[in-house]
Amino acid sequence: MTKLIQWQEIGNSRVILRLDLNVPLKDNTVESDFRISKSLPVITELLSRNNQLIILSHLGRPSVEKPEPSLSLRVVCEHLSKMLHEPIKFVDQITDQITFGEYKIIMFENMRFFKGEVDNDPELAKVISSHGDFFVFDAFGVSHRQESSTTGLMNFLDYAAGPLIQSEVSAAKNILEDPKKPLCTIISGAKISTKISLIETFSNKADYLILGGGLLNTYLHCKEFEVGNSLIERDLQQEVVDFFESDNAKKIIMPIDLVCSSDVTLDNPKIKNISMLQSSDKVLDIGTRSIERYADIIKKCSTVFWNGPLGYVEKKPYDKGTESIINVLADSNCFSVIGGGDTVSVIENMGVEDKISYISTGGGALLKYIEGKDLTVIKKLGL
Ligand code: ADP
Ligand code: MG
Image 1 (spheres, rainbow, N blue to C red):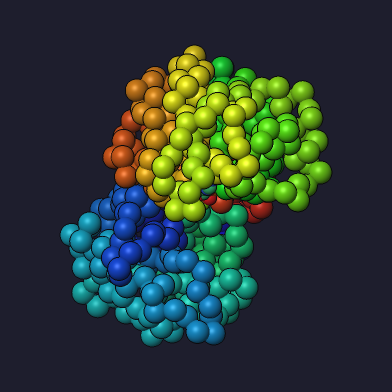
Image 2 (cartoon, rainbow, N blue to C red; image 1 turned 90 degrees about the vertical axis):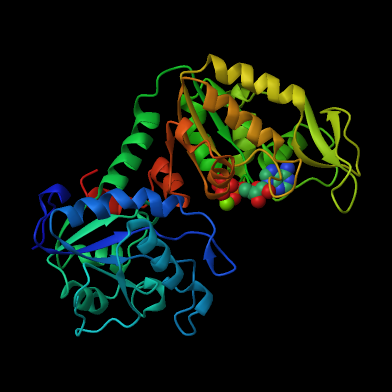
């Protein structure tokens, strides 16, 4: 039987370390190293206690039959090695014949290249475990998955929760269990169906609810506002309709104006009052007066939870609403937790990461955690 231990107690050992180095790549280089930099403390601390490390991660969703070379972790390995000023041995085949040689760190190829990872095949976990004495799990981003490199290895080695997943879970718990009031929740992004459980969870706790993006368009459409050919979800789940009609929906702060375009190229942005939209308009961001209204609310709040960009942030100037609200949070003293891949990349591009209380590396896992779903890994880690 394996047991849960504390990662700080591990020394002079071979440690299998599961990280989330699933970072965006562009032109075969690392586009954002936010997740890598968040993983540096556990690596350096384990090394300082004279451990040797085997680092495991996944990257994207490759096919096991024909792994895409573009999803190799090799470039990530080189990037990490530079950040650590430490050579790393890259291993692309998992066998029982792996040696550290003169290296302190080995990194395996993308775990999802290997048959058995996603199916949680104990054979794969067994071979990997033969190279380690302990297993440290510090990949919050896959804490909602039962795979060889998550729960699989916990059946073969004594295991511990790393410091990053501990702080991720404690930030999420803080927001869920004991948020300092008033609490404002901003939920935005593309599709309401992927975020309805999040909205339901927070609408009970929050004092104010701000919607944006496709979620706001869909809400406005249901309230019989013209939203032209904006991004909306037409086939609404009953859950969404029920929420819109519930008392909690009264916590939604209505926007005043929106930025839209009627060009196919999405150029020539216009700011329009929410009741002035026409059938040819496509809503792409919140307007200046909405930004002011939302900013006034946020400034009154002690806690803010935010997931999903407020506009079509990939094209300027439709990132203005999102950036303005990030600046409001950066300048305020409230406790702010922000998650979601696209939301976090806007913050990184602005370079204000240090001014936000907590930025989650979790992506979909954070949403699952908040919804109370798929918590096997979290429970095993005693978090
Ligand atoms: P996150 O990754 O932060 O959880 P989502 O993946 O749910 O966020 O949503 C992000 C996507 O939503 C972005 O690609 C963004 O362009 C898009 N989006 C937000 N608002 C709009 C809008 N008004 N029109 C079209 N796309 C939008
Ligand atoms: Mg996204």
